[in-house]
Structures are given as structure tokens and as C-alpha cells.
Length: 571
Image (cartoon, rainbow, N blue to C red):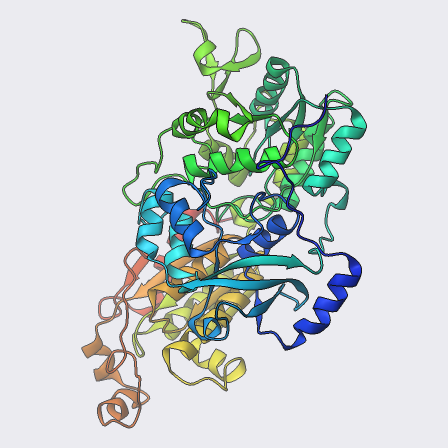
């Protein structure tokens, strides 16, 4: 029996042959160039290798609007997720329909040329409501849409020049065509795919084995290694964990392959999208569990999607997408049977052992025992290597407040106290010092202020990643940039935001540097609090008013907070 056909009947491999690619590459030297974001680079890879078949490029406006409103391309083909190239207004002016643009990776390597066929300004609020069913920025994709994505969309056909280079785990990186060829070589024609963005524990292994038995199919473990939810375990660690799991699988029945997808965490729509992608990779079945591709709770504490909404949507379109869903509930460990079973198969009176993800992370964080019924010792050891207890992790204390509020004084007091405690390298990134050493060429426009804080955030993230303590004390007046800094640093360790909430009148009365007087006299433009806004943090970990608290007391309060968070502990 032959392998299942790609979605739409044809695998849309967009790479040119060597001669055509070299010719177009030479011509493209004069084309406007767009440096792809991380998400766009993932999309380009899957557009070029056929993972997104039947798409042949970024969607034009007609396809985009159809996908938003009916989950269908302009020709009627079912497709649930918009795949668009968002750019700046300045770049969009160079990319009118009928022109060509070069698409480059972060190092400037040209990956593709795009024939610009459509250009428009989207209604992002409408996109968020239609695709993600929310405008809550606690949803990671909505946050990207509103705060990161460019304001103009471009659509058009892609011509592949060069495939992205991946230096890691090359033996697991298969294009759709390569994986199909591998399946053909092994004689596999029934393949059930398991989508994951987390390390696999015993419950996941038992679920996949049960799915393979039920479908009488071989198993493809197909984890996402592009972009997942902020805060997820990075793919380097996860793949090492998958390798341990793979050793537990029967030989010749299971394959590991990495998917360079940028997830949107879009719940039901995303699940349908995942199923279509797996068909393009040659799979006949697809496992869909509870809350597939859900991003967790929103600002109101409630999950964005129902636990089985994804299964219901795929079931509605099962015939059209042509890949069979294998639905699963959560797996529970029944102590008396010493095995995992689906939650709905637990009998009355049976003792069930559960370890939530939150509790698992707490035990990792605090170095506590993790039972073997929950995970393989090799997987736990791998995670412990990467995620030591909190008191051994790096962290950043990020002060924000008006000029003269007392940030630098408290930050210096905290630095001394942390150095007295010992155990970590401590670095103070004071606003004035950073301005002198890293940002001397910058002014005080909003753009330049953001660049300055972005640089501070980058340095702090590197310090945190390497187990040190970074103390940052810029004014950092804008909410969005503070959020970006937090997101960057929390990937590597702890983040404690301290709002030094000393009122403007007190700061102005102090005016040790005479800056407020100059701003009032019009000698300093764009001065925060006078003629440029300060956006107060809504939910900092600490809020300190220096009218009521001496620097030594404030620094001690921060130490107590760090201790409560687990980042420092008394001998």
C-alpha cells in the first residue's frame, strides 16, 4: 500500500534547482531585503519544504480573510491558521504588488525570494477574535500579534534559494519528502503521529503505545522545535529527553523526527492545523489529547479553550482533512494495577496517583524526589542538569521608577547585601552607567529609550542564564519594553520587578542633578514625568515608596522577597 497523499494531493516543494537558484540569487542582490523574525523563519522553512502544502507562499489578502472568517482559502480549501508575512510600514512602501523581495535569516543568508502579490493593513483585533477567540494579551499569540508583529502584511509566492541550516540534531531533521522516503524504505504505510512541546514522561509513553496498538500503526514522535510557549523547556533539553524515551520503545516501530514549526498555541484551530501538517509528513493518524495546543489560563484565570474543543473540531472535519484522529483523555496511574490507563477507564474505588505539572516543576525546583511511576530516571536526571534548584539559578532584579525616585541607591544597597551573602556573581546595571558604557550614542526619544532598555535586558539575560545576579536600575518608562525584558529573562531564571513608586513631586523636590529644573525650563526635551510619560507597572513583584522606607530597609525587603521566591536561602 502506498503512503497517504499530501494534503491537496501534491507536496509543494518550493526549492529551485541549483542553476535556477544561483541565477535568482544573483538577480536578488538589488531586491529589497527583509530579515525574517524567528517565527517567520519557521514559516518559510515549512512553506518551502511542503510542510504547509497546499500553500506555495505567504497568504494574500483574499486567502487571509477567508481563513479568518470561514477557515477556508479563497479556493474553498480548508485551512485554519493564517500564514502571513508581517513587516514594518517603511519596508512595505518598498514592496508594492508586482515587486520581488529577498527573505533572509538572522545571519543575512537569503532563503527565498517572494513575488509580492498582495499588501494590506489587517484588523488585528478581528484576527485575534476569529483565530484565537480572544483579545486577551495573556494569550501568547495575541501578545505577539498586538505587540510584536508588524502593522502591514505581504502575501505572495515563494521561490526557495537555500534551506535553513540547522547544526543541531541533524539525524532527526527530516523534510516531508525525506520522511516519506524513509517510511517507504521501512515499508510503513500506517503511521500515528504524536505532537509534543514538552518532555515526555511515562504517561505520554503509555498514551503513544496505546495509540499505536489501537491503530495498528507505527509511531512517529514529532515534537515542535521551532517556537513554543514562552517559558517552555528549550528543545535541546527536550530532544535529549526524547532520546532516553526512544530507548524504551520497541525497535523498528518508532521514529523521532523534529518539526521546525512556530506554534501559535491556538487550541482547536491549531490542532486542526497540526493534523494537516502531519498528513503532509506522511502520517495517517494523529493523537489529540486534552486541551491540545492550549496556552493555559488567561487574565481571568480561566483556560482559553475547553478541554476537548480541539477533538470536536477535528472530528467535524475528519473526512476533509483525510487523517484519522486518535482522541485521548488524560492518563492516570492506577496504583493497584501499577499501570497507566485513560482517565475514563479508572474503576470505582481504584487508587489513582497523580503528579501535576506544577507539582513536578516544584519538586525539580526544590530538588525533591520524583517517583519512577511518573517519569524515567534518565529523563529526570536530564531535567535536573538543566533546571537546578532555584537557589542555584540566576536571577534579575529589575528596578523601574522616575528619575530621583531612589532606584540607584536601593540597587547599590542590594548589590552590597547580595555580595555579602556570596554564592553568585553580582552585576549592577545602573541606568547612568549603561548610558555611558553601552548606549552613549543614544538620545531620549521613545525609540532610543527602548533600545537602551533592550540592551540592559539582553545583558541581564546573559548574566541570569549563566547563574549570576543582575541588578538593573533604568527608568524603563514603557510597559511593553519592560514586558519584553521580563519574557527574555524568565526563559533563563528568575525575574523580580521592583517599582520604586516615589511620587513625581518628591522626585522633583530632590532633583539632585538639576534635571527637573532644566526640563521645566524647556532645556531638556522628552524628560520622563514632565514632557514624556511614565507608564506605571500594574503588577510588579514589589512596590516601594522611598518617602516611607530607607534604602537599607528597602534592600532588606527585596532580600526577603528573593528568599520567599526561593532564589536565595540562609545557610
